[in-house]
Length: 343
Image 1 (tube, rainbow, N blue to C red):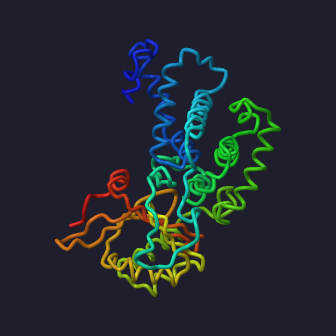
Image 2 (cartoon, rainbow, N blue to C red; image 1 turned 180 degrees about the horizontal axis):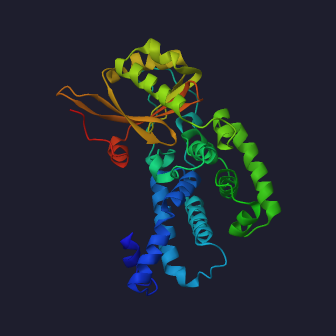
Image 3 (cartoon, rainbow, N blue to C red; image 1 turned 90 degrees about the vertical axis):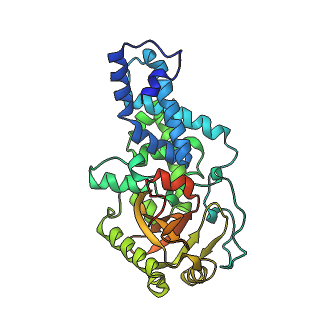
């Protein structure tokens, strides 16, 4: 964060001790601001950029901070405006393959188009967007609110509705505080929240909607067991065991390709057909999007295993409902601290 102190010649002069104190105060909010910006923007690197811009604006304008609100509220106001600026200049919302067209047949030539990274909802490490240990209900809400399906559903809301829903439903801010942050009325906030809920109910999975409101069980041993079972079946390439773990409507998709297939038998056909090269893979679990996730390494003919994809699993608490493999290993393996190869 020392880069904040030297980022601009027009930053207000601050004595070293005061500068260090301000830097520490700002840094204390980096993780929660990153989570907020990620939910709003749907991109991990966009969120990084938004938070860095928030910190720079806060540093430069701190002499005008009158203390009428808390430092945290002031930073959220800046971050919201930064994200609104980004969303206003974006050409299209981020999506998942399932939002771009019908499902595909599980055949080699059906990968579909390859779209640039800014087209996709991106994965993010839990430790960069989720709070530390706390109340189990709050933890469950936070985890559900960064799941890929939930973040993708948020992208269908207008920017202000998106912000209202995150601040009210996820962060539990009072309506009056949200109204102050957005320079609007409590009635307007409540109306935006109702409209956002209605849209989200159509697009968010049942589990995500319920648990994002704290109505479902907190993730724990059940999720861990499901991940262990899935990884075990996948590393053995036991398709009978693997498809038993899949929901009837489970989907498989692989950004940056638009292709996706649906249903256990089509997923089996994909894995034993075009995806047969994954047999013999090894998996390294990671924490991503409050979900089950792992880095997948395919066998290397020269020996060992090489990166193939970052896999994030959606689930309903009992079965896997989605398998998303992000194939840009150069981008994601480094961000998640995964090794370059397995010997």
